[in-house]
Length: 176
Image 1: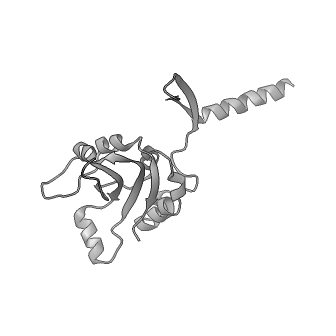
Image 2: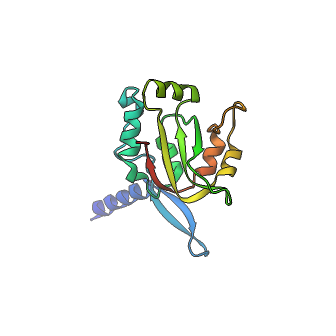
Image 3: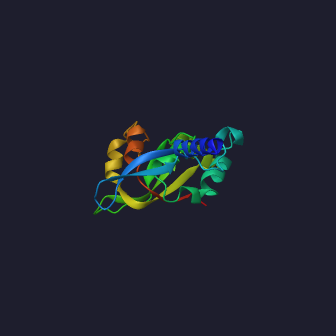
């Protein structure tokens, strides 16, 4: 019987250890401890290395085909999963009155490389990420850096990433 209790104790410790604790307010009252499984990437996720440099196949497999995994997840889950560096971003559309946008288009190549890829009829590799709640686009742009004044799209950086990390994802897609 002692062996069985000891076994159960270790199983319970493992289960709790594989979760992270977060404090959340419920109805504006005291914090409640919530356990969430520590999952940075989808169980179906394959590393970029396994695609032997094929960025389009990597994005299609991990983010288009597995888009359901990211539904209702925070952007930090996406940021932890994507192995390609985000070069810049642009708002798909935004409301001039509120300054908010429902989605962003992430670019993984520089403007020059994207143009070359278009001219050679290769996928320029952009990814659309839609949000459950609109975000302040003007505020996000304020956090990002621009290299030159002729560049229209804000460059991606850690401040922009930090600004978006808690935003929940509604959908992810590649352009058709």
